[in-house]
Image: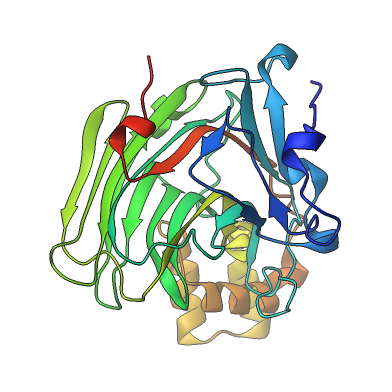
Length: 310
């Protein structure tokens, strides 16, 4: 299938910032002046983010173009300043981030929309956690993430250290081969007057009232962000981990992680520890390529400028 890069409207503004910034055509997105690539330089592959066309048989929600994200086995790297390294952090990604000056959100009410499409050949790769969008904080952790969990496309809320909530939005058996429209009305606030309401295909699926952030600024990211690479590899080799333990021994934490991995996810640190101990026993594992399409990615303070589909 032919993929056409829209060079003039997509890549980019000047030689000095062409490695890091993206400007999407209005056919696909609005409300964002400039977007930043999640990885820069040699780490960000050309296939990672592409504007594609309906005439080339790509799915499009409205108009004639959409945004195609792809992550292949080994697509990791570090940011330009070297402060974050996905390869060392057990992660892979190709994302776009809206965190430039004037586009971060400090307070007030906003509307957001996007449509996403999972190809018919899409696989749920649990216990690998694939994230298809997030509202992050400058200098702090994300507050709302959109992950594919074992049961399907879900929203995860984490406002502060003691807050955690997850809710399934789209079931596995309904995800593939069709467009899903997401509409969000949010008020960013550290106080109880905040809220976050979310509709999927015109149905209210999530309604939260309370603090929506802990830091000053919130910003949006979307694309593909995979966490827990070693978790997936450990799970695919779970039948040889006991043999590894017999020969190399194990800690209580490692055995608990092995037992838990049969039915649940385990945390990053213990997963990496388990992988490093037992990888010599493992058969090679290649993580399948992940692909998702986004279209009609909109941000505004007015509802009428986002999420209107016929």
